[in-house]
Length: 254
Image 1 (cartoon, rainbow, N blue to C red):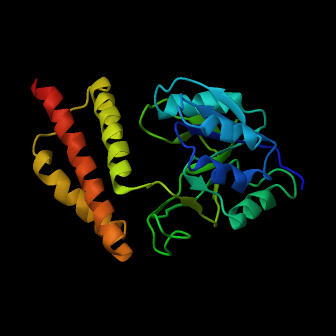
Image 2: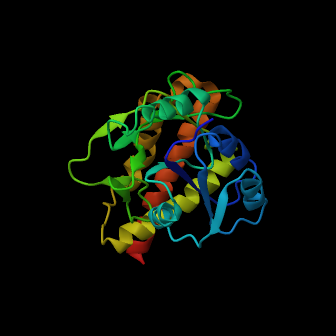
Image 3: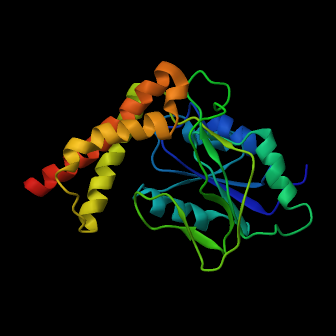
């Protein structure tokens, strides 16, 4: 099967349990798959290399800097970023391939829907919470933000942006405890980012953050449709938002 002028890049750390399926899903889409690993002590790198990925080790200095480094390792003019806990199903792979059938795609960047998939689900729920960031783009159209915490592609002014129909399956949760561990670490990064930017959040948010974050996740993100797991993940989201405020205020009050 012919591959398209596309490089795929993935950043990893200790993803041995997930990286294999992620790479298998896109292995026929590109001849240039780059895995940038930030010091895994499991078999992540070996699994990636066994599946034909080009593995580069780079110390982690934040999400934006790491993805910028990964962009620079790519050889092709078009770039696709996926995370190690994401799967591109066959319908999405076919849709991306079809963009290049007549030559250059009509747009220079594409938003790709990313839908939550909870443990035990074979695919994301029909009404699962979905975001649609730019993930497929020409390297001349933009690049990842330098922010350590904000994971987004900053596009050049006037870039034409399309949207794909098929969804990435986001398997972000290994377990509730692992989710809390990851969110706790991310809240540390967010607090450091707020401090670096000289931004102060008001103290009254220590009272409002937890209930409003829970309601947002449970109702606006439709976790109420996902049963007991939906309730518990909404609680985890609220705990994480509370931790972010608590840590930020603690630093200010020292």
